[in-house]
Image (cartoon, rainbow, N blue to C red):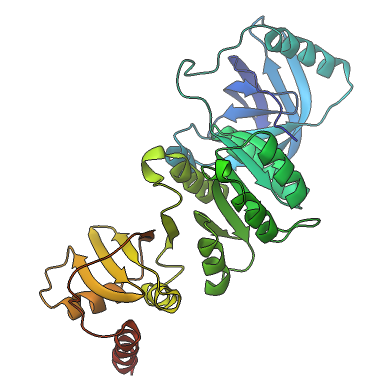
Length: 355
């Protein structure tokens, strides 16, 4: 279900709000809706008459519904302008026919989008069984500049990825026909799809589910429910090439607030992984070196001389992001204790401090 093509054409828009006639602008129209640049917001779900003033001066008034809002804060985060998205409800009226005829003239001819000549929009395939969520995300991601395609189950998504791999696959863990976990496993069998960034949506935000996703190579995990702003920011981060290391080296990636450092080190110890865990939180940075599951060295921006105390300090972090990159780690063991001993000591100290 590809997103309908949008037309970029400057139009004036008029609508009534609290007894006042509001005039705004739009440069983004499709056959299904209009995004209006304004800070004169209406409640989502409101139905009203929206008047489009075409470049020719012709006015087309259509019954429309407020589909979503883009606040000033969210617009700044997404690099867009604030406004409202309207769904056009009229289908077969004479006014709708006139608007469609105008759009057809633009769709059949050249229609460079703003910033033409710049990078191509990032393609996102969204897979979820909820058509309501798909419609919402199609609008939000499209307004944020993504090219959006949708699938209602894992099997449909699998076929779409094989046919035309997207830059990002945003998928639900629970879907009919083929669930998200099965889909991830089937995609992993295709080495040519390694560059597709996977982001899992789940109503289960437990550490077990998050770790399951990261262990399967998922690059991000988002807990339902979430805001459109949060999702767009995360997908923009995934779409930035500089922030996407070689996929075969990345084992885990996520948020420290969602999965604690202690939980991560316990997992690496259990699976006897080797590599470097990079953790960043505001003005703090730490690198934890792990050899066959055992922490052997810690580098930190904090001025702490004792290696074990540096590790204990990192275990206290409760914000920021982490990324574990698999690689061989050699050198002297500066910690000198098994990881589980350190974790138990840290838990004991925290317990005593809380009393």
